[in-house]
Image 1 (spheres, rainbow, N blue to C red):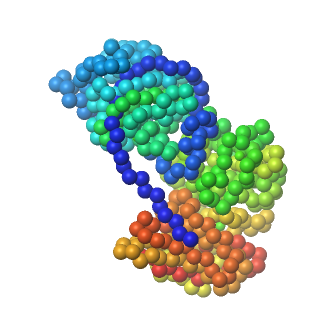
Image 2: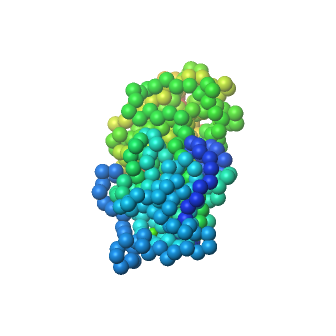
Image 3: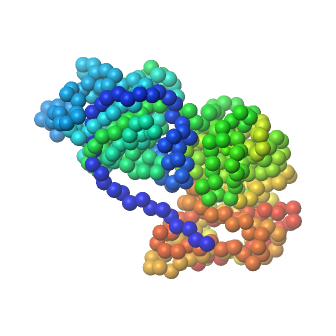
Length: 481
Ligand SMILES: [Ca+2]
Ligand SMILES: [Ca+2]
Ligand SMILES: [Ca+2]
Ligand SMILES: [Ca+2]
């Protein structure tokens, strides 16, 4: 087996602006319509492509207008074709005197824009080049996470060029969030950001790599996940009864999948302080599967999943996170579902986020509940049984296949009944699970890395999946690096 890291070549496309109104109001739910398919395709593209700025920052976005008076909006070269006669007239209003924005929108309807005759007034931190842009003044109608998107949907078109979307504080102030990419595309942008009711913001639609063109900006409150337990007392009792079946994690390639028809519940949690966090689900009413994704909205980049039996050990996913990272968990149930206990705990980090390097390997290593940590759990095995957590050892490897050599990491079970060998992206217990081999085979299991595309640092984990049987003694040999 081998895996290959996916790289995305930057591409350039052209930009611009104008506005008009279309229709429809609604809540943003990646499980609806066009956005859905895209967002759940298992793409590794960060829908964010996105960065969330510190609202307390006072740094202004770069102003790059080339006009002699320093006001880039005066650089508008006028109309052409379908452009609005008055570029400062928004679809739902005109920016007031002194406003930095080109127009005022309330976001209740999609906003058509055309940037082909606009100036390059802003450079957002997640875009490049001198794309022309347009800025909208907007007042948040609610305190919530909102999605600012040029993805289009079933009724309005996506941007036809490489767009970047930024959210700035009132009056073109500090950049609060920026997104260059969408779930499956680098062209359209999807930004999810928290806003406060009544607060004024500036939304900038920019062109990446000097792109210009037209498209539609939609502004919608995020409706998935359904719950946000940030700051709430945990664990918390929730239910999947009456839940949707919009989520399908089968395309991620993980080792757990409840199959079609499983009702789910989606839950958001924002990390309060840097550390190692265990997300867990425990229930006596169904066999739980827990998926964890990055981002404040459903459909973000997947991290991993884990499952267990009814009334068994909790299903858990554990990773190291920075303060302020926002995660979305999806709890899948079996049968008709039921109530469950959802918890997020900050663990005492024993080896994560800095596991030791495996080097050329280790031999004759004992792994029991006394000698191993219980920090990480894979998708293709339980995290434990009714009595014990399955103990694990964590290592890092560095793969360098330049010039081509290829390398292997091989687990051999010297004694004991069960071990799982699995692999995470990155060497710091933060990354997505890439491979999971349930190693009941005493002849061993091997992870193979071919070619330069596989170069990088990884986290390798060995789990003792049968601690009742006694000590697992294993050898882990590496020809990598
Ligand atoms: Ca620009
Ligand atoms: Ca883009
Ligand atoms: Ca489901
Ligand atoms: Ca474990």
